[in-house]
Amino acid sequence: MSKEREPLFSAKNRKLITNPLHVDNPITVQVLGICSALAVTAKLKPSFVMMLSVIAVLTLANVIISILRNGIPPRIRIIVMLTVIASLVILVDQVLKAFVYDVSKQLSVFVGLIITNCIIMGRLEAFASANKPWPSLLDGFGNALGYGWVLIAVGFTRELFGSGTLWDYQIIPQAFYDIGYQNNGFMILPPMALIVVGIIIWIQRARSPQLIEEN
Amino acid sequence: MYSNAYIFRYAAIMVVVVAAVLSSAATFLKPMQQRNQAVDKMQSILAAAGKYDVSVDEAIPIFNEFITNMIVIDQDGNILDDYTGDKKEESEAFNINLKTELFNKSQNRDYRLPMYVVDNPDGKIYIIPLLGAGLWGPVWGNIALGEDFSRVLGVTFDHKSETPGLGAEINTPSFQNQFNGKQILDDQGRFVSIQVVKGGVSNFPANVQKHKVDAISGGTITSNGVNDMIENVLESYVPFFNKQG
Image (cartoon, rainbow over all chains, first blue to last red):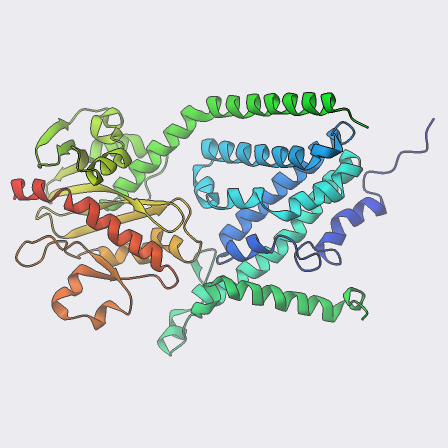
């Protein structure tokens, strides 16, 4: 018999989920998926919907590629991966349109962005094509979550200061506006997302010295 | 190492499998998607006429009860079809392809346009569906006019893929409510449409303020798209307004 089975949530497997949240975060450390982080984070709600969609697509794509990994000819592996991602995204879109039309209207523009999200290609190429399905599932879930929390943080900041609302509910009281408070219009423009991501990276590095490269 | 034959076989099988999965999903889900689209259109029409928050399940019965006439008019303002039955979602007016008709208009060909009429004791409401181009994709909506064909009672806008937080704000109440009470005809009864403008409506002369609403910061191209859409669609109804008025 082979060696004893590894427990489902062994320390190594747990790290697959926790690492992308912090020390190996796809956005703040690997600097992948920045474009969608800029595009969808003007409000909290689309950021959240984007997070859920990426979790679904990345987890499933990772598992599928991991199952197929021994049969995929290396010379066409990128095309195979793209086909899997694109089909999953279309499938998710079709199902949303049929069952939760409201959410699908929210998603509209992001569907295309999921296909081009480099985090997904990155994980398929770097992890799923060389690992078993279960660790791949954890890795996909972890990375999507790591991507998602940054999105939520940026969306939160931009909506609160840019529109005075959160999840479309008014947060900043009318009294503030009456005494001269103004929403920061710059917050809802894409450059501010880059600056907010930069601040998150700054805080993260200041608190975790292991992330700082040696010159 | 994999042979070329294997690679071709692999690619061919993958393509067939993916095509089969996607096309069967599309086929099975299509009836539900079409129903959702029809319901969404009804909710938008009802919201323009002041009936907000109609739930998905109630949309079809409420629509059939609230809207009284489904009219089709031609480019000269003649009424071609006037449906008053109970299956309004199957009427000609509801299913006109606005995109095709507006294209015919731009090519100077004959076209037909739909109009939904509410005949209630407080006066008639005329609801006109709109369609135009935003920055990234189509924008559309409905505009409800009062009996004088000038006063705007309500609008709804929606979009396929405008930028969230910028152009996408056209579907929020704070933007749409600005249109309520505006006029599409001037004091002499000439068609002037409604413009979305930069720099604050209150900075315009008092006599044109009733034709203007504030644009969205950072959404200039979408705002221009909304302008063009309202003007292009409503002007096609002017012959009809003149015949009725």
